Amino acid sequence: METLQLRIEEHINKLSHFTATPGKGTTRLTYSKEDRLARNYIIEKMKEYGLAVSEDGMGNIFGRLEGTLKDAPSVLIGSHFDSVPNGGSYDGPAGVVAGLEVAALFAENQLTPKYPLEIIALIEEEGARFGGGLMGSRGMTGLLSEDDFKNLKDQNGISTEEAMVKIGLDSSLPKKRDPKTIKAFLEMHIEQGPILEEKDIPIGVVEAIVGLTQFEVTVEGQAGHAGTTPMDRRSDALVTAAKMIAQFPGLAIEEGEGTVITTGQLNVFPNGANVIPKKTVFTVDIRSGKEEHIENVIRKLNELIELSSTNGIKITAEQQLYMQPKAMNQEIVALMKQISSELETPYCSINSGAGHDAMVFSDVTAVGMLFIPSKDGLSHCPEEWSDAKHIANAIQIFYETAKKLTEASSND
Image (cartoon, rainbow, N blue to C red; front, side, top):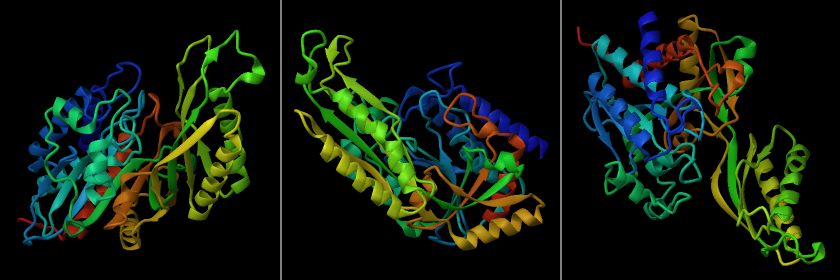
């Protein structure tokens, strides 16, 4: 176990160096040079652990341990390796590391699976470069079409395909994967909240993931001189946006039952200190454990847009993502709880307030997810930290779960 913890720390430490903001957290945007460096490291480790490596037409990475059954579906284990700007070292990479170390345990114990084992490292889960998020898993499952993928551009107008070419990836490779080739998907993730640490419980077995939707709202008004345009003659896009955003918390509180709304991004154009803003673009993120609450808030958002579209102001809202609340596979949940008990690792049931690739895969296959504690509940910041011993606990549970799901046997 100590050797495993040291290896975990080494992986996390190495991957944390591939950041565009050294000393200010992990900034690893999809198809950046930092992506390429992290990708090289992951591929190198996959090969070292005896896996056959391939990539798809989006740049998702697969390390495959072949099974003895011909044309059998694979058990997938992994997470994403991109980050938010100035994020932490654990959100995503900890789950990729967990997958790598399950493969290492298969190799060390000379196990041959009947069903193939695949360790996967997914791109653009955060949506920090191309918006929407969960791009790798959505592309794999067909939720993101080939045309939609090609049409995505970052804030600098660079398309996905152009960005892929820059780091030597081949966008012409297949993107969608036949669901019949996937038997199950397992993902370990840091909790990103305070519950496990406060309860002093090392493992959270995820029962469900909240539903979420994201909108990009554009408010268009009229630019003008800050000193010469009277207050009653203004069509100020920022003032209108600010009034709307100020009402969002009230919508969530009114809906209740844990419904949350966040505006995390706001851009003002032309962004001059002495110019009345002509255009404001902001995001709206709505989450709830029940779909009806999400739909209610969307309706109220549309009503608010209608009411605010006055005095030369035009407002449009584009829905970039919609994910229903998702339950995890009950058989895998029960299996992981049983294995946790056998390993004498305390656990509790938990729901995820964040979206994950697991929620996308749950539409096409059996999914299981484990959480480990986050120090002080912090995530998406440089202070994000989780204990390697907790990651090691999850790896042991996944190893035993993967043995059962792949029906692995010893070569002895």
